[in-house]
Image 1 (cartoon, rainbow, N blue to C red):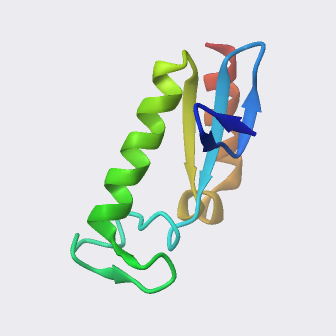
Image 2 (cartoon, rainbow, N blue to C red):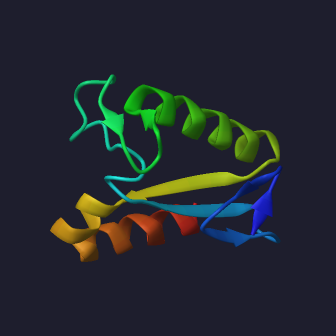
Length: 93
């Protein structure tokens, strides 16, 4: 669903909640992409450029009044139960 011109992964309009699932490669996870100048050949941009784009996107969600929870692919792969518990806590806030 689009929010402020950006597509969000999961949106609850009535509660103003967005949950984003960030793939490590597609979103250039900074824990993996330690050099901001690393070029992502799929995105045709550097990690630094992708991070800036994601910041603008998140800012648009926040400006529209949404709360946002980001789940990183590597966190999900490592411990999905912990991620789910974090999402449950986020939803209960």
